[in-house]
Image (cartoon, rainbow, N blue to C red; front, side, top):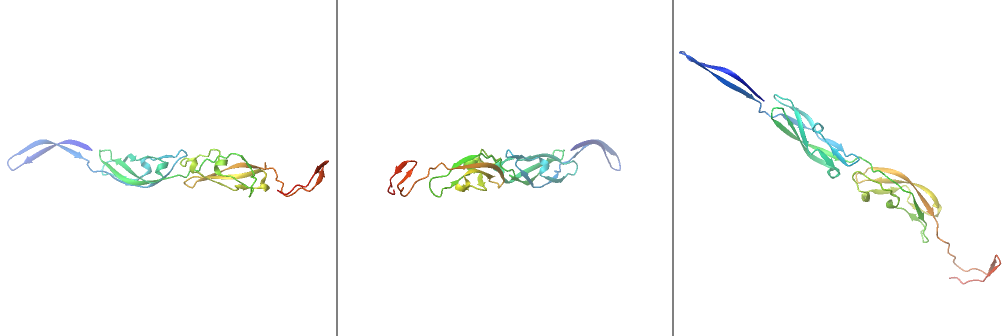
Length: 220
């Protein structure tokens, strides 16, 4: 702030006096004061977040001017910034004086994954224990998350092992969990089939089946 005015200065002694003009300039060279506050910001579904100066401004004052919020840096964040981040807020008083303060911006990921299921068919094997066990990649139909790559998502099921008692269509629920602990679910059907032919063991006694004569065969 620069305010100028012309004043008349008179100097006198007991014999005489003299006068002159002088310019007086008033300057505001005092910086404002500012106090920051910490903030917590959630990443959006695209894994991006941003802040403005007001998000970390708590209070401020100045001897002559008003507090103007200028900038906060950094102001943009992504998945790589999850956790605490130091930022600097800059303000001015409108008279050319500036001040800064520091704040901590905590970036969090509270967005659940987009769980996508697909239906599958499982064939019971010919060897013990005669069960089918399903895994996430088999049922996953392209699940996505704002921060966690598909390959790092965790897939769990309300039921993932099937046997002869489950032949036919089975409804299951798959839960998809990201690295931040957020989860969502989707539904799928697992169709269990038995395509394994039976195996005859032991000996076949001589008999007559539909007019055909069979002789006893030795056990294998």
